[in-house]
Image (cartoon, rainbow, N blue to C red; front, side):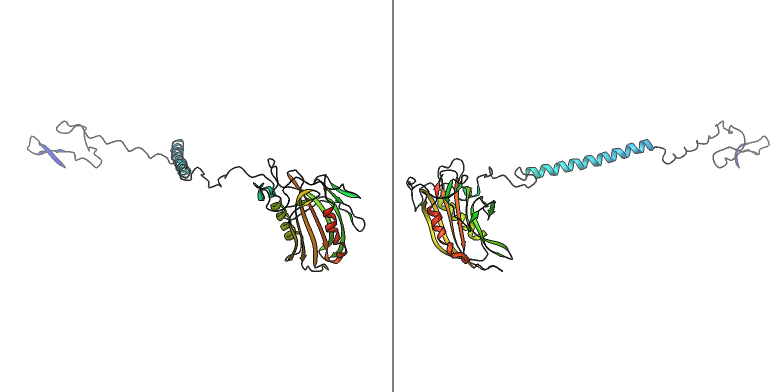
Length: 303
């Protein structure tokens, strides 16, 4: 209790003591005319959880949008750095070294010579006697040659052998034996091979001949084998410049009776961007036909 004044009998006048919370116990005016204290308004109730869903989603979208934007900026920066430091090849691909060489394989390996071959004929084609007797004619290769009777029969398929895949389509053959690997043949086969580009007027005949002969040895016969060279170099066949390789190969293959073979590969310039190829093979089991190699080579005539 607080005393704020004196009564007429000299006793102090009592005044109400404020209660907790600021409210007065009696009256609405103090002894000095001061208005009573007004309690402050109660605090606002807390917002219910989840009540700002739309705003919260907008804030989340703004946050996510900011993160995505930052990722895009970083990615573009990395791409720009790679592009500027990779000499124009941002993804490390192989740089083009120029136009693709579409020339035939033999034309790529044996470009046209700038000088005449070091050996063999360099003049104009010679005139030869006209061919007689039955002939095998290969219009695609541009040559004809002697045709033989039994046991020789016409070649009736296309055989693409070796890395160069010379397409033998015309000729004669007969089966000399059958073994576990299939059938073995004596053969006289001809083909045309692209050996120059369209602008060439001459063939590098020596190079082409060596490439074809090497392909024959490496791909047509059992490996390993031993080469016994007989003839190798420039010559003329049917009056046309030619490269001739004649050899005997020695080999062994499981189940095969033949252990050797006499072979000849002639590549003939027939005045086109393709060269004529004549391949003759006589297995060692049939040496009575070895004469055919010289005989058929002498019979070659250009068409």
